[in-house]
Image (tube, rainbow, N blue to C red):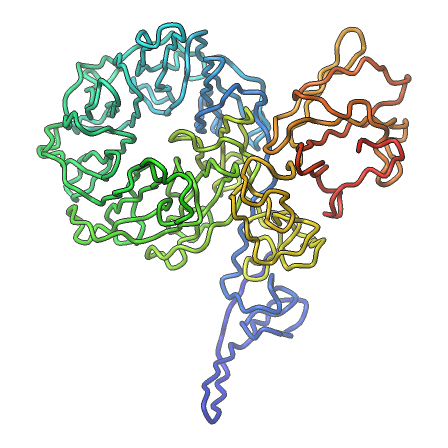
Length: 610
């Protein structure tokens, strides 16, 4: 139940050297008026009764919920209504299997159906996908970047910018409609470049196609004209592209990047004639990974945000955090004059995907990011609505290989409850997943895991960091120091300066397939740090309950892959319990996950896997 918080007056106490203002407690809390932290909110209705927090902010994200596994080398994900039923479906593009798929949100609350193929190409690599109404018929079509790979003849590799028409508004898609063929890595963006109220395509190309260009949607129905130049300095490589009104004249300018600069070109006439580029910011170490535009400081113009990762020789192992950072540049006059760099965070390693979205519902733009190292999905709160960002809040560390490309993290109201949830596509563990934006009833001001849903606040090692977000759950380490950025804190990492060796994380997304023979095949996403996997099987009686910490005997102690077929068949009316864990050759066995109370799960069976 929610209660209205109303401060009706304040008591002022004047001392010898202090002035204390104590708000009067609102009287509409049925639990009484005791207010321990004197913030004007009675303890019985205060989500942090011992810590003043007038805003009562409580933003937490639930555990990773897998939409699809395996999705071979998943590269991009977005949500949009593809079938016309008013809820958010999901689209993903993958690397190894060349599949572009969508998943129906079957109940509008985040329960997804099986993959429906939009397109499949045995040579194909879909590594960027975008939603848009390309043909003007009020439904969502899909734009994608596709690579046809020829391993025996790399010179024959081909990149295509294509789109797929939503034929009936219900998710039945046309064959591929090619817009442009290129030879190098390409980024795309959709916007109305020429002011005719339809979606044009802007792109930046690498290698032989080192230029920024756009294609006019000639008839508003998806017939695209030839490439028209935005910028063509062939000595620079483009890595990302974005379009927004940067100079306040109500047309789409183009924001892009070289290896070491963030640049923008003005749409001079509002019809797609672009001026030479102007510099927004520079990063001499190279490695501009992503650029976007958004109103960070709430003054009704578009500022610029950029993600940098050092790219020059030798600096990838340099511990200097300044070589890896997310920054923003204020649009000081609303006309495209940008101030110097302002830091969002240096607590990132490889931030290749960023997005500006309001995750905490306070009407300003926070920052969502993916970090390849550690498999992290992060968000940064815009603390004051003026561009002062808080520390990174970890939504998940179970998205291994997230942020290899722009578009691998995104936000959308997946479950229809009015707030923004988060989606991720991760290439190393082959997962498309989402994370529900929740409230756990504990205000962020006193929550021991302020970005995770953990209403019980369980803290096994009593270090003040809740077990659900602690990088060493059984070894106290309040500082959370992680020198190699692998997600395992130094105090529990057997190789604290080697990101390749650490205790494996818990396995999420264990899937089962019953074969006609009665055997069961188990599949799970690979987890970082695991060299081998163990499989335990226990008997589940007809009652459906079993003794605490008793998960059965080890049936496979050292499995090299992430699938296992168990030929055993349970007795009639009974079942099996399966528990899978990872093992690192140097660090030993990893986590088996957490029990209902939040403690690390332990298998006390005498025949458990070592």
